[in-house]
Amino acid sequence: MSIKILLVEDDLNILNSVKVFLENEGYMVDACEDGDLAMEKIYDNSYHLAILDIMLPGADGHTILKELRNLNNTPVLMLSALTDEGNQIRSFDNEADDYVTKPFKIQLLLKRVEALLRRSGALSKDIRFGGITLYPEDFKVFYDGKELPLTLKEFEILHLLIQNKNRTMTQETIMSRVYGYDFDRTGNSVQAHIKNIRAKLPVDIIKTVRGVGYRLEGES
Image 1 (cartoon, rainbow, N blue to C red):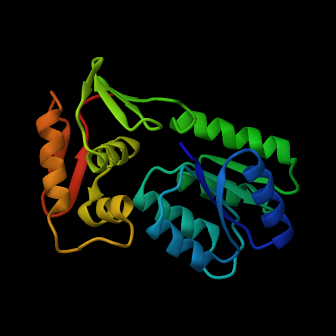
Image 2 (image 1 turned 135 degrees about the vertical axis):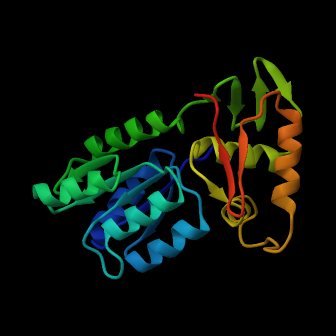
C-alpha cells in the first residue's frame, strides 16, 4: 500500500528537503506552501498523515488541523518555528498528534512520522477491527478467519469506515474518497454498497445516521 502524506510548509527550502527525504523513504508526498491550497487538498484527497506548519499564507495550520478533525482521524504532526507553550497547547487541544519545533533533525522527524503511521495502522500489513481483518495490499477482508467476498468498492468503503471508526462519514465524503471527482452526487451508489457490505458481514456494525451518513461502531 502506498502511504500518502500531506506536507504544508511555506519555507521552500524546508518543503523541498522534507519532501525529497520522505519520497526517498518510499512515501508519496503531496506538498504545498499555501494554507488555502492545503484546505482544498484535504477535501479532495485521502492522506495517511499530514505535516502542517502553523504560520502560512492563507489558512494557518491551526485552521487546517481543525478542518481535518471535522473530516477524519488523519494523524497530524505540527511542524513549526513557534516554540511557545500556547501554540503547542492549542495544537494538542485541537487534537494534533505530535508537535515538532524548528530547527529539527530530519532523521528525528522521520521517526516521529513512522511512530504516528504505526499507531494509526498505516504501516501494518493488516488492519483489525473486532473480528474484521483487512489486508489493504491485497484488497482482502476476513471475519474470524473467513474471507468475505467484497467487491473493490465495498472493500474501499469498509476500509474508510474502519479508518474513521466511531466518526460519522457523510455520504458525499464517502463517495468523494472512493470515487474521487468522478461521481454522481445524486446517485445511490453508497447506499447500495453499504447494503451489500451489511449483507456480507456477520455482525451489524454499520449504523445509519439518518440524513447524514454512516458510522462504524459496536466493536473495538
